[in-house]
Length: 145
Image (cartoon, rainbow, N blue to C red; front, top):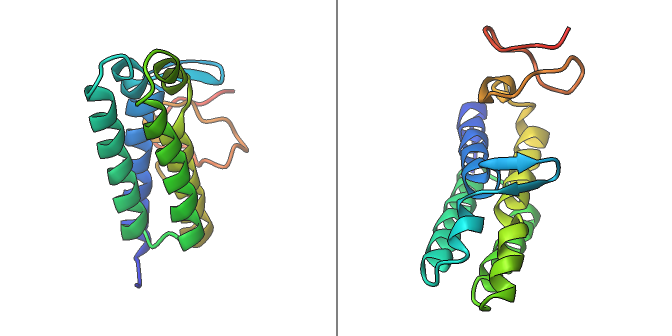
């Protein structure tokens, strides 16, 4: 499958949205909580959300032409994330802290950048751009001086 750079980076952006919504709505250092962590405590809703968001990530991986290895790695992260949701209390606590969607999205984004170059939109996601962090400043984005 021949994937254009534009289509691959569209998948990169989708993965960014999914990982932020799922695992990084609120982040403090390396720990973040998103919808996946909140819904982990609601039986039924936890597995539905986890599988749906994971399915979207895999779909974007296929559309981006990600390698089989990357797709397998993503699948393992997502399987572990969804499986923990099924164990009451302890599993829910683990699911709250285990950032499977974030790890799967990062694997996809790394694959896309290796095949199609870095994304031009990193700085446009509300993150301050530091010189030398691999992201090109975007017009209107804040920068450190």
